[in-house]
Length: 318
Image (cartoon, rainbow, N blue to C red; front, side, top):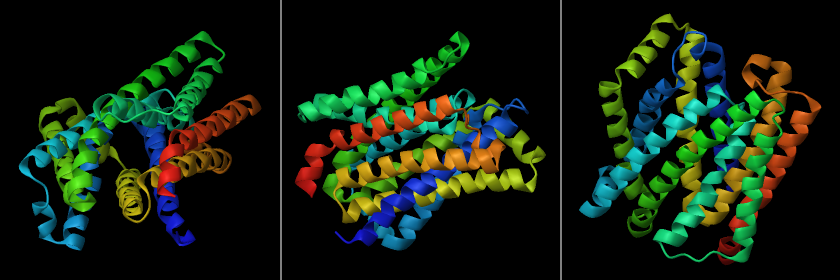
């Protein structure tokens, strides 16, 4: 494999990470102050989803919409809806935790995916993957335990619960996407998956009056910089998705996932410290020595866990 291909998962990890910091900043500096629920960011997803649909159709042509069967289309639409639902508790978690902590907790997703694949798809779990399961959840527990005050520990536990709910829906979305992607190819399945997301977002805009009012309040009161950041977060996400799914086409799926997750953890950890020093309001990380050490240990644990989790597939794909 050409080393230049590594730029795809690296780029995906970088843009995903930048989006996380922008979301964290908007939540902490603007949504809390203006009493706007961070869930309204779900509605802003219309921008990134719309860009992806237009981009895929323009690149692959309208024939990409004809590759999936009716049953596959139904599953893909449901997968897109599940992915949108996952972002509701995910955005709520930013009210209680900094970016690095959220990124570490999100790594519960591949663990849950492993268990779900074993239950619903009949895939086997190796002893290495069992060890990975323990390691990753140990990292999440470390974040909860490291909180000294009882109130802080309760907030960490609440954050972990929100992320766990989000991960369950993300795993459900992946399980609905994966079979169709294997049969029809990624582009032909992903467009319908995105259409499911777009449909869910349109319904949310129409039905969720509180969110709609919150987003309109933000846009009316928002300065150019705030609105630019909101749009930038969606563009970062769309770019990350394009780079990540492009990497799935040219390298083994397990390898692409491992590289993106591990690189993402390292990038978030490093950027969290850099931003907190140069732009504290944007970084919002605690720069206490004890906190940094806890986060570093958790990042290393999760990185090792992710590698072990995919060890079997990596050996086969490599």
